[in-house]
Image (cartoon, rainbow, N blue to C red; front, side, top):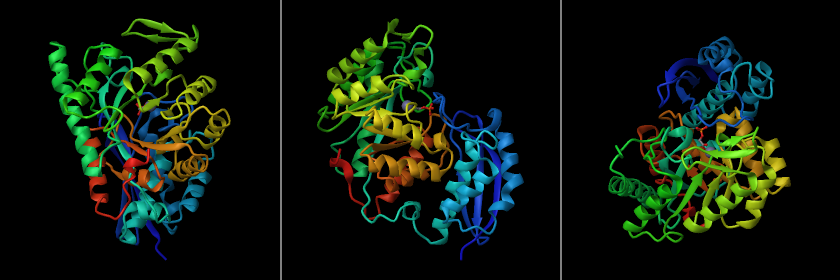
Length: 412
Ligand code: PGA
Ligand code: ZN
């Protein structure tokens, strides 16, 4: 039987230049699985802790002090690896060793197993024979915590090429829209410098509506019909605007203060006006009832939980009970281990919650999420458009397209 022969961690850097950890899991002294850990900026309150006390060094110490406990295990046995991690840290939020520990060891183990068996990673993550490609969902314009002062309050405007015929066609549409949007923004705003947000979307000094208008214009200039060839989506990351004390959403750029009810009206109006196909975290992370109002009103829009559901099976159960969303983000490091995240995915699939496997705003050049998105039956893969750390995932999708998978493009 294949066995893990060593586990080794090191400190490396993410796309924001922040320290993170990378872990090598080696099987039979030969087959290396290597994973480095991304980090969020608009982090949900119920996510696990990425690093103990925010210190990657502490996480690294934990990895190197416990590495011998993984030696001799089967790298394919995700449950056993997860349980070994749980013997080291059984806190709900991985506060002792950090979710990054669980993230990196579990993904590296499975990658190492895939190398041992000479098969792609998605093959060892699922035994389903019918696999579909998720649609790449790309960030074309950034605001909020990802872009800073002067940019729109909406954190992300996203392009979804749901009318595309192939993965290559889909990613090229996303590149085209991103490129054309730059032209539109230059024409619109003389002060626009071509600056970009953390996830590679443009970061102009315009308001929410102007940003959405410009994004629609970019699609139209290219001859794409909104709602048919492509659609726009948004991530409001509403918890970053929510002021609990005053019970209002504070929109600094648009100088608006909205009550929960007004926020629902505001989002509903955006969905109608811009024919949005996708809305993430439309209301704040504790507002399960408000989200269910939107889910009920817009059954054909991806009403998606991110900070709301935080890749946590127990919280998802609550959201399902209240019908708070019809789609949910899967970010492995919100959950901790890959085992935790796959359990979340199983539960989502069983309950017809559409999965969107997602990057973080602080990314690494790893590309395993392309495989995780496919193996979990994700409908979309939220991986950005430009920037090396985003393109690495897009290029992995292109490589995977050489395997015989079904194009899920028309299945939304
Ligand atoms: P992040 O959030 O900055 O926490 O990665 C991105 C998102 O809200 O989807
Ligand atoms: Zn989000």
